[in-house]
Image 1: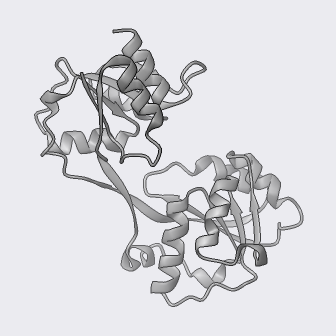
Image 2: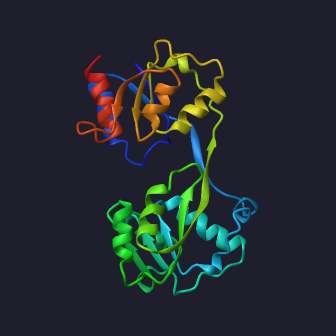
Length: 243
């Protein structure tokens, strides 16, 4: 059996190679969509003036790259006094690509919106925050928390999902496909307008994709995350062990 994963190949393939050896399958990677920065024109349509903000909230490395790219394109020199609040330490460390980390005011949480608000606390309450997001992402939770804390903020879209042309993939050659995001499904239908699931098994891993699969009239053989399924690799393993 061949399994298609709708993401680019990770740097560490050991876990996937172990599955191939254990179950005698072949695993291919091909991104169904990419996250790209907004153009300066698209960003300006939001009527956001970057110099107005004294603090910025990042939840991904892609948003960090997009922010500094936008600063360059709009000729805004980020001041050394800028404060950065990141959802995780991993995201915060990525700032080293753009700033001298030890000389900046950088804070990070545990991955939850609540932890960001906790990091802000009363000490940084007077800042004007720019919350960076992706187009079509749901920022209502963090916005509600910022409202409750009485913080001055604006939500700004910096990146967007861009469907990829995957019509060159021979879907009939695969026994299963792993989908992570509703955008995966959108790209699938865009490239294959007459797509029918047939014997193709679907493994889903991610928030939102399970309901998107159901709404599309498709069926997932394995769904995660869950208490038992904490990674896509585990979801694939459960699928293979149940065959």
